[in-house]
Image (tube, rainbow, N blue to C red; front, top):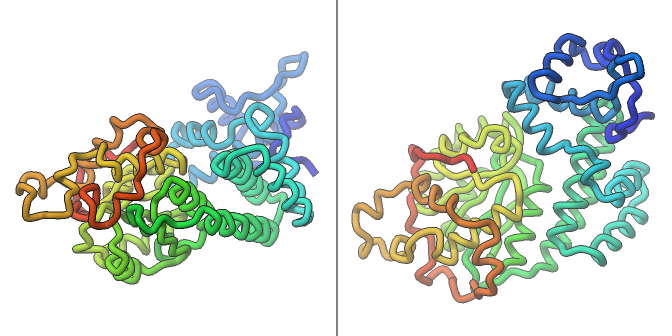
Length: 366
């Protein structure tokens, strides 16, 4: 059985057309316009495509079905499906094979090997995430069943839960509520972000999948949350979020979004009254750390005392404040050795006075 990460030249253009339904003329057009896919050539000049090329074509087709233009779909394919032979650790392929056998003892041994060699963030970003991406491609190409994908994800979720617990939870750090939107059950990426935030001293309240917005709002108020982070990965969860958005009205804290739907359409964050922090958990963490350190915005604007803030300051929307985040270098105050433990809910760095205005406008793309 051919593996989607295999870059061996195997298939002619006509065979690819039969397998994918994409005409050979369209493939040549994509190649001329976007340089993608990039097939090998025989001595006679005929194009030969690899299993990896087929996986990339399937990815582009899936994005097109979601309404994404071909040019953007190709960009996303380059970002998310870079050739495994060029970028992935050999450990990733071994872990994929172990999970799909399934051999959880071997998978556990491989993850233990990864933890011995890399930081927790590197294990998540360079081992777990590409493993999930590879397994997702196998499912999209019909190489494995949904059951295979679910059991592999379940195994990694257990490991991430253990990492989340091991990271502790700084009760003096700024409080952030992290949840999947209503109807959203894909939470692995959100768990990775939660682990990264906790390791940086943020007090993370992790609510998990399929959390009603009304309940999230009640919980956020009860714990004195200073920010909300939502993950949206499917069209259904996005539409449900839109329907229930009124349940967040009056919740005067900034809202941030991530997940596949936002990765494909970052401007959705503006429409939902918040800000898109990007596809990387490490970049999102750095930006949030900058916010809570008081470097993203003035201390007065986040003083937690609205009586002292001018009306002009109170009128600034989340999107306007979020624009200031973009000027910050990635990996800023969080890595400078500053202690965020003293910035609790009552401190001058609290972001709780920022209105989460569903009508906020401004540049949200990172």
